[in-house]
Amino acid sequence: MRSKIVTGNWKMNKTAAQTEALLAELSGKLPDTEAEVMVAPAFVNLTAAVRNLESSTIEVIAQNMHFAESGAYTGEISADMLLSIGIDTVIIGHSERRAYFGETDEILAKKVVAALEKNMRVMFCFGEELEDRKSDKHFSLVESQLKNALFSLDANSWGKIILAYEPVWAIGTGETASPEQAQEMHAFIRKTILEAYGTSIANSVSILYGGSVKPANAEEIFSKPDVDGGLIGGASLVSDDFIAIIKAI
Image (tube, rainbow, N blue to C red; front, side, top):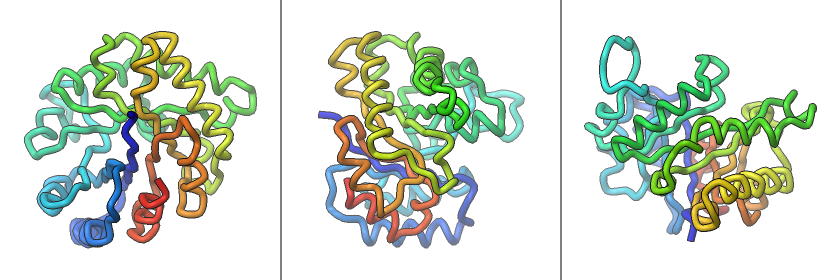
């Protein structure tokens, strides 16, 4: 059975004190759930987050990493650095990394391989811009993003892959893909994986939806058969909202 996952991507938000306060609220309010719950604080707060959640089932993950093991890459973080503080899951390919920092499919493929070589789990993000959807290119764009970054992997590697579909036009805009649009794309993604890797892998990989998920729409989105959870942005910064989303799954 596929894992249900709810992940809070905190992006460039929360000071050290604010991070500790939010983690305390979340761990105190966390409901009984079979879903995996993850949070991705800023790099400078990861060590404290791991320490603060030692007795919690909430997993701390990273928002990004570099593909090199070490070297002259000022400001970057390696897989070994993350592993050394207890982080073994990393988000790769978020739309903001693609848009603001020029991360290409080629770069992302190298990051994925680097993480997998260290036995880390990868939450791989992908999705179309509004113009892609308006010009009816959203399926082909998503297919190319998947194939370029992931389809050179061997079948065994897929046990460490979580997918997160992000319709970029619905991130931070207040717009949300309808539950039917989300299901349509998630079903297409699963079919694309099935054609390349077979039924077993296609049916076992978790595919999350990321795009303005809120307490008001989470239950309906999560009820769709190919939607296995959410990658939550703004709503994960408010404990009551994030807890409500967790309950929805």
